[in-house]
Structure formats: structure tokens, C-alpha cells
Image (cartoon, rainbow, N blue to C red; front, top):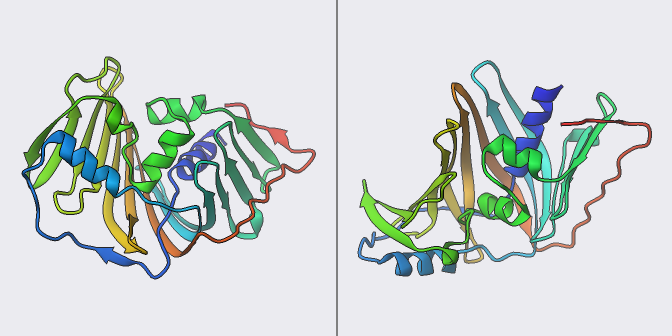
Length: 255
């Protein structure tokens, strides 16, 4: 049960979006002459602007012992709500700035809690804004709130704080033509924990550049979890509902 719960929670917080009638974005001429301040400014210009989204999301999951593939319905309202529902609402989840909730009709169980469990699971302190930034391809930490240095390696910009944090290290790899993040790395060296978020491709719709395919790798010691996301049939800025009510009589899961 705990393994299944972990998979569901990780999958849920790593879900966001693509776009309707999207085309895969390929970069133009690379520019390697930007300072860290200029690079951050260009990256912030590319932050997606949307109100709501709806999509069908294909999710693949591997942990070295087993693999799974599922398609779910996903809806989101920026800065307020992330919602996911499996076929026939067998499993449904809701995440807000205050809490994470889900229920499972297959075994009549539910979970309600804050971000502490998710933070421990992925090895870094999370809140709604950090999760949202991660999913839409923005830097998980606000790039305006720290001093960064920039370098170039293998045709990719690398941004890192001039002074790394005491408990973990972070790196952002950026495309030199799109100025979008290609990879985010968060490492807790002493705990042997690493989180890698790879944006394998981007797509452009209504002048917004959004993630198209994402690969997430969470490593702890010798254990590795890999999640792939592919976004399909997405529409933006519609009026959406987010129905969610835990059925009576369900047993609460304590994590």
C-alpha cells in the first residue's frame, strides 16, 4: 500500500501541462554571450502565462523492479488548484496551497496532509509554488532571490548560486536559444539524494513555450524512481470545475 501511495503522490505533484494544437519548439541561433543577470531576465520572459488548463496525460513509471503506464485526466487553475482523476474516478486527487488530498475507490482509502511527506519523498522542501514552477518548466527556486554565476558546458548554459546552500546544491541547465530550462538538479550529497527534472522537449501555443515531454528521476542511495510525462489533448483558459469529495466510510492513510 505504501509503495502504491508513494507512486501516486509523486506522479500527482509532477503533473502539469502541454497545449492544444501545439508544435514542438526547436531553438534558433544559440547565444552564449549573456551574463547571469541577462540570462535570468530572458528566462523569466518565457514563463508561461495561463489561467486554467485541461489535458489527458500519459504517465510512465519505473523503479527498477516494475514499470507501469497510465492515462489520466488533469486540470489546473494557476496558483490555486491541481486536480487529477483516473478512469471512472477510481482514484482522484486534489492539491492546493494548503494541502494534498486523494482517495482510492479500489480499497476505500483516502489521504489528506500537508507538504511534509512530499518534501521528504523528493528530498527538498516543497510548497505549492515550488511544485507549480517545477511542473511548468520554471526554476523551482525564484532566480531573482539569489546571486548566480553562469558557465557554458556542451552548448548549454549552467546557472548555479555563487554560494550553494548548506543542506543541498542546485543547478539549472538552460537552452542557449530558447532560454528555457533543460534540466533542474537538486542534490543532498550527504544523504545520497538527488532529484533531476529533464525537459526533453518544449512546445509553443499562443506564443507560450511549455513543457511537452518531461522525465523525472529521483535517486536515494541505490534506489531510483523514473517518471515520464507526455501531455495530450490540452485546452487552455476554459471554465473548469474541480469536483472532489472524499466518500464517507473510507479509511485514512497515515504516512
